[in-house]
Image 1 (cartoon, rainbow, N blue to C red):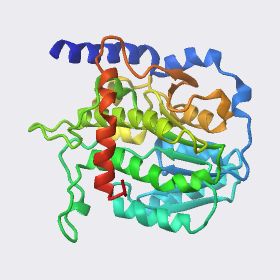
Image 2 (image 1 turned 45 degrees about the vertical axis):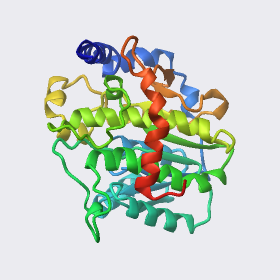
Image 3 (image 1 turned 90 degrees about the horizontal axis):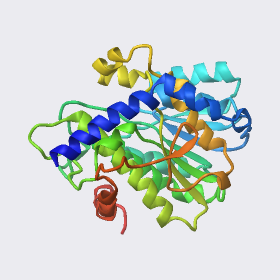
Length: 330
């Protein structure tokens, strides 16, 4: 077990330095086709979570610049309004709207879903981008107010429960946009270092926020895989992706040592969002539902000998736990 963990970390570090940095993108970009990014998507409704900064902001701007109607889901109203104004100015697209929602709160997500569903319009693209790394053990207040039902560890609440709840609640609207509807979930290369585990809220005594984040990101990849299987007849494509190592505000704040060590080698926000926008623009017949993408190409979900592939067998029990936490009907 120790040797396998060490191998995963070493493989991730070496492979990541070679491929996930800016130089890796420059090498991969030699195979990019400029026409892939020239599609216009006027009339398509898109939701981008965590859209006020970083990869979410760059994604929202990329979609808006191609004519989409973009709903920016942000926790902070003031930051969201500032980001919206900037994108409208940059793109000249007036069809950009702010939706305030705390992705760590299931009740808040349910309220947002109810409001948004009342518009009774198709949802073509859902980008699950919102995420965080919290290094201390923090639990969401939702578990305590008004009565202690569930206390959710914060990383898990945002990265996993928020992604799961938002996707499940948006499915009826996405069916209205079938067969062109798609869900794009922004994962992380950190998932290569972790197998799936049923210890969703990190019960170990010494809390490790970075490890919890990597576990969360593995869940997102496995969820995407399972959604593609479960909803194959609904005309919705499900894709997860890795943005590479980008110099986002979240990385600077949460991983200052990593950010400093790779100063000048990290990708820009726009470069990190490139594959998200690419996935939004491609004809669905070019894509594989349930697949994991990196730099405009399908990528492996598991390193050789890393012992992560077999762990995906427990995704059904994880979904049962998530459904229970969200109080969704079986």
